[in-house]
Length: 363
Image (cartoon, rainbow, N blue to C red; front, top):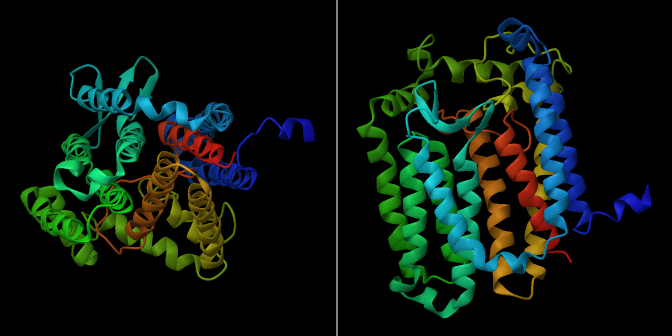
């Protein structure tokens, strides 16, 4: 047993926490999906089987990247970014891009389907970390930060027209955070924040479906069977759970009342079955993962490792917070998986690989 543990060259507290969160995700995907999977596909284990395949591939990737010298990736930022942008553009190619519920966010080749936006987040982190670390002094000028702005803007634009407002917001927040940590002047930082804050309501107003979601967020009971339905069902699930929950596998909302119970809204099922205490424990583990990521990043003796580690940690942390805000009705409903927990192989595999690389910083 101890010999096998030596295979993990990275930070073991981080790796074990991430694996534990992923196993918890498999359990909750089964609980949230078995009824719908039986009705839709005739197999109660349909979603959990796919999740286990993603977990197996992700663990192999995590092990590989935990033994990788992160400094070897420094020159790969630009090629990786270009590839990710090409993949984002390919989702709009007829016959290659796959649509679902009015959004075109996937590339399908035979039985294999990938979501390029999951790769694009980390490609942007890798490029930005390498660029900013090469000459930190240039980050004090607008010309110096322009490549990061352009790469982040291009990534956001391609994700936005899929459309995927939630991931666009996450990448935008990630870009601003990395620019701030990379040494951008405060005056320039706040100047960037103003157009971003203006752009959010404008983007909502120019798209009818986003405006409907905003109105449903403000008063979901005005359209309880329409745009407000999903948020109402999510709130019912959280309220039904109370302090200690209805018990594992005992959710009522998963019986096809709450859409996307196994993916975007799985946190509502966690709240219903495990209660506020269960959600609190979930956030404790998520907070430990984020804290451990920042600790490992701060120990790096080079700027590239620091920015790469912080970027990977921020991708996870921002997405957890945004997903929780959507599920609880703090911000308008939008599709965004809960990393390491929601059903979805691309997200799970890429996130596990990224944490393997993050753990290698501890060496």
